[in-house]
Length: 451
Image (cartoon, rainbow, N blue to C red; front, top):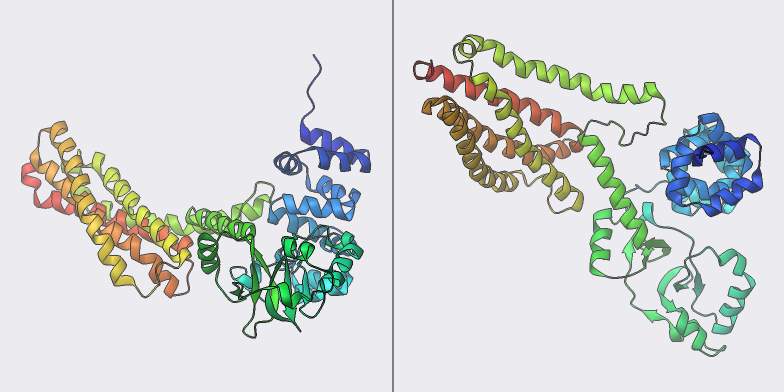
């Protein structure tokens, strides 16, 4: 039976034979997910050789498909001229995303080799934060002066069709010496007489967003309006770019994924197994080493009460249940607070409101969970006092856990500390220490009824 050739093996063979036409066909014939999978199985030298064998257009297409960390690594490794020619083919937002991740020397060298207009555009956009309209917008759009006529515009579109073919031509934007006037639908342009000026057929009072608007405001905007894109203006109403609906959704998804990874201790927000082993190990250890110290502190509570634990050995079965269930309840509150912070639903100064909302939930859930574990302890050992000890400890610890879980992200945000990264270790330490302390203290008070 003939052995099946895996997709990355096929790509590796094309690279080894320097088959540029075959590589071009491979890119055209395969889905994005298959290309990403195959590319990730190549070693670093093969990845660099692949980019060197591609045309600038195919290279740009590859960078658009693979994760950004891999794209940045590729651009760092290739010759400056090659990197510049490929980046020239990308949309402005993608150019900025990659350039902003390079060190200053590499970024400057590449910008010097790029088309002057593209380089100037990047230098302007790179000053925007990635989570505002200016950091998400693209500058590839069609804008014409309001004094121009329909005939002049249609001629320009025909004469520059090759340049405009990659633009998302849904609307034409009309300006008056750079100041945003309105939007012109292609239908109105095509059906109007050639002598009609754009000022006569433009849709004025069109909705816009400010270049400083936060990502949460953009998400709300596209939730409210079913637009393909929206113009971005500054305080002087100068048209700067266009924010596309799909780019806002991608940015929202990227932020969610970053926060998810950070809550699990992946420092830096992204990790791929194609990254250097030492880098991956160092990032993980920076979080795990702190956690081990915090866990030792929590375990010291058990050591302090070891005499009580020896007398009531059955309690050892319930200690991890108490800490784990309380931790789960607290993590639910952390997740809600992180989500509300990202959406702008809650602000860091609203600690007391969030605290009260979480305490109410914690009281209900604490009583229910405490009753369940208390009944389990009673039916197992036939001792009602054991049930009261573990049930009471879990109930109180649950209330504290959700109160801390709901408020600690707001407090950390106010202190300029990443709440996604720091909330988990703090919550785990507190719930473990308090859970052990409550259970062992209650057991000590009721020791005569437990042995």
